[in-house]
Image (cartoon, rainbow, N blue to C red; front, side, top):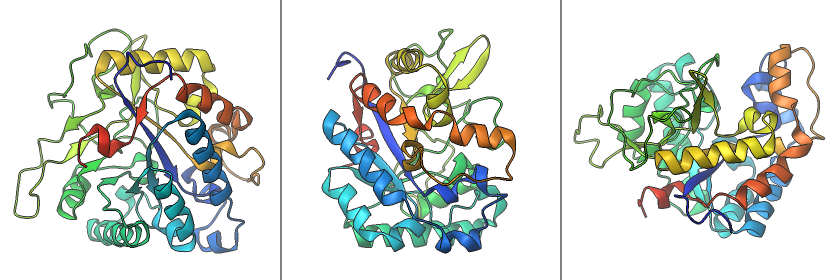
Length: 305
């Protein structure tokens, strides 16, 4: 694999199906989920094949709803050498639910995923990166060791209701350069979590990679921007962030390699654009990225196992 001179970055997958995406919520009711065609198994298997061909291992943030209905998929992910982490159970935005309801959601998902996978679940990623400061304490208290939900990019209507800018990042890179943001660091201790009897271990934040260009902090860690930005430009920018800031986090979803998924009408134009742009190119772009960047599982980057 090329790129051996670079520090490892985290490869991550948010395991949810096409009809569970927040951008489609206005037209796809939660009550209809069980009536929809499930495509998550075939699409996740496509990702597993890419990772197998390129020698990449990563972290799969699995939705409890999916795991409950497709337990064999979770076991296949483990058998292929990847980490199982939690994406919660019901895919609800954190700041739209009471904190106790959020606690019940993550406890349910963690127990379900551990029972199916036989693997302790250490990590969590919030639906649509809807993390809050209060929810971090809940995650630590319920046995999680890290979160990867902080996406401090500018100009998005749901990302990043969290401010860790005052924390001292961990890493040796120069994060003050014109094309890199401090938040691109792969590992950030969440020092605001005061140790209590319920929080016995260090708890870490793994921010999604961003890039500072022309005075703006742009999302540069996957998703729609990965499909929109020219492939070579994205790879170069991601490698620059990884090498200059001490690491990075890339993410995508199984539905992003599925150009044949059902088309949903009746949603905002910008949401439709974000969801459907360049789906035909994702798999090829991902394979080239995996052959360029040294990726690893989050638990191994954090040295938690």
